[in-house]
Image 1 (cartoon, one colour):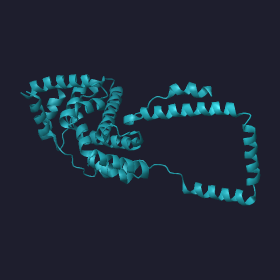
Image 2 (tube, helix red, strand yellow):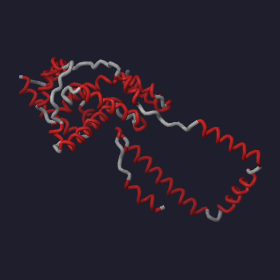
Image 3 (cartoon, rainbow over the protein chains, first blue to last red):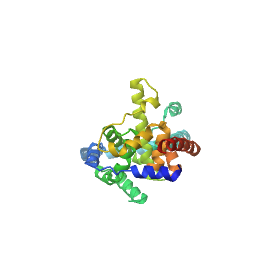
Length: 118
Length: 174
């Protein structure tokens, strides 16, 4: 018996499965993806206008200006920590992307020691 | 629908996030995925439908991880393969048996039984990996490379599964 005979045997037994409502059942059971509730955007807008019209934005801008003035003196540690966080984030995202291939999650416990260093 | 159509649907689901956009993919692949499970479980239609449903739900939830380098069908069969083996591991733990014993399904009577009995008799003689390899390559028409990706094994290992399966099937079918 050669390869063709085996192929013919399987071809003979190949059968199309009738849907019979299976697809609708699957769609019905799919979880709904979470979106940001509309109410959150409404309250964010209200908060923004309250800050704008009550004049509270002036001290807020002063605070930011102070921060930028002081930032010059602490720029080096800021850059170092930002770059470290960026590198860790890239490693985490890449490992997540590779790890979730074909629907499987990779163990990410080995990243915890690096995160705890920060 | 070709692979480019699959990519189009995947992109649409990822951007819109609507469940209905997933419908064409389920309709296209429900038959091959359910048939794959049906043959792996020796005709247990209820179990096959449960496993197929779980496969599509997992595929929907992990669509963002589909990078498009491989065929969508290969990616979906890989999920189906994992779902099947996960179910076997649960069965193995519950029954305190090994994986090979857990995969010994009894042929279940259903609408397809009469036509399929000789196929399932033949498949019963094969080891689990041989059965999976034969079904992927001969029943579902995947190439050897695709089947090895689905099973997560080297190409040489897949070929050895196929060779062993063909020897056993030849003895049975003559």
